Length: 395
Ligand code: SF4
Image (cartoon, rainbow, N blue to C red; front, top):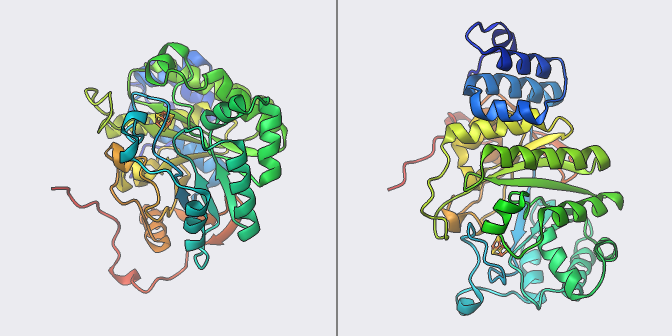
């Protein structure tokens, strides 16, 4: 993928003075204002955004492209809430169609990976009364007792807000209990779009944007790290996206506790918003690039390949993304149920080759971005046959 260089963008006589001024700011390391961000969303061409986002990405990471080996546990796909974009949850009235794992069931899944080189378990799912503070603290303790070095990245403020309220404890007390039980970090989910007028329509009843940010803030104050997402491409407008990014950037200024920003594309299968078209690949790439440019205080931008597909994930590496999630091993249903990849699993070899075939340097990391292995020159038995990944057409 060839995007114009920054020098070409800065000299481009066809650009409007506003876009040229924004490019100059980025090149000089000056922070973008909300008005600049909106301008980029409304007017910036794809090549312009790619050149600038790639410049920032390479300033921060060179060609290094991170991935980790993880598996997901989804304790239940039944949920009290009824988010209109959600293809995953089974309503309470159709509860028998879903699954509800016990502690033993979850431990059995964790133990299946005992002989596998994984460094992280990612736990997230629906919200139900039996999954409460005692359930999760016991789960985290049992996972740590069984495999102490496995990093537990678990639950979002959506679950935490619900279980702490039910237990009648404060966010501060609740997050302290989770930390003591063995929680290592928080994933970025449940953020959706922070603006109330959108959130009330697509995710009414669950934690507000403000509460989402507050729980992350408290977690960061405990010296811990987390990620942040934005669900885009449904009923929000560009102003809502910038408002969302602005709130993330402001909290990051305060705490420095976010590691990674992960834009999540709205997928339209099997949910109440199925009448909405999905964003195009061009819009997806523009959105990655603007996230990279706006969030100047975030170290990483991640593409979640089960959601956008492998080819777009490869392309995203030229639009500001420096991290691909992950090997996953067919353990999440969240995006396959919404129209994403049906059995998301990738071997380390596949992932490494996907990264190498677009000229980047694959680095296996742990959850906190400690480097575990540089795969740049690691040979694989099937290297000779590999000529890059091409997605097969779906019949
Ligand atoms: S998005 Fe999460 S909280 Fe909303 S219905 Fe789906 S599982 Fe429940």
